[in-house]
Image (cartoon, rainbow, N blue to C red; front, side, top):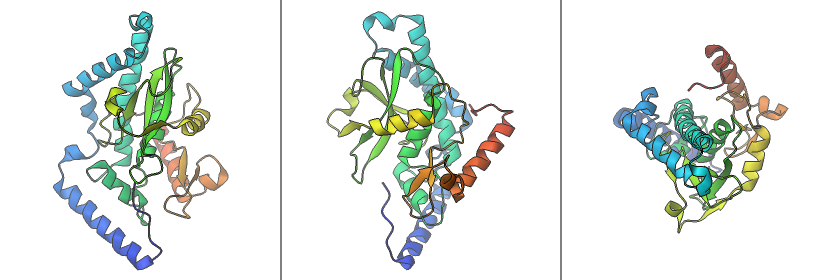
Length: 266
């Protein structure tokens, strides 16, 4: 998580300028692979192999009698493919500048809005939004968090078998590698302080009903403009009238126009 801004305006300005200097240097010095993936990334051989591996990891969550069913495999493959493609799309919209990913939090939380989005829970909300675009028969989605309430808090999306629950799940992390999806099995997370985040799941289920058609530019929450970490729902009047709310609705309109009404860009 990014630091909390001080109450000293001069200190905040100096910190913001230092962050901007780091960002500019990073943009020049860091290789492109450290930033958002290029569109062709999703079709490279290693990523295609990862998509196949994730499909198998998801199928392993199911009861043995379901794993061989064509419908179950198709659903697992859809989740795997969509998660990979959506992670790339989300990162390209956020356009992260720094590596490792947590350094981008400073750009999002900076006073001058160097970046609008890019926190781990932004990726969590947006990835969850994309995975709610179809009904699931064999799998269920949820949100989880590591080290809740601590400075190292990290939010992700998880997938478990229908009828099962956290922690019997595969965790999907679109943030850690700037849009290059990382999947963790239950065994991968043993010994770490991960918890289910049911309240976030319930909120996102309400905002993004199954088979929703909201565009990829839609954000569940937007900055209120009052404090660096104060967010409000994007669909209520106070949210729509914020600076970030206006940006979101403009982006949604432009995106739908460019894609001839298609909600996704992947």
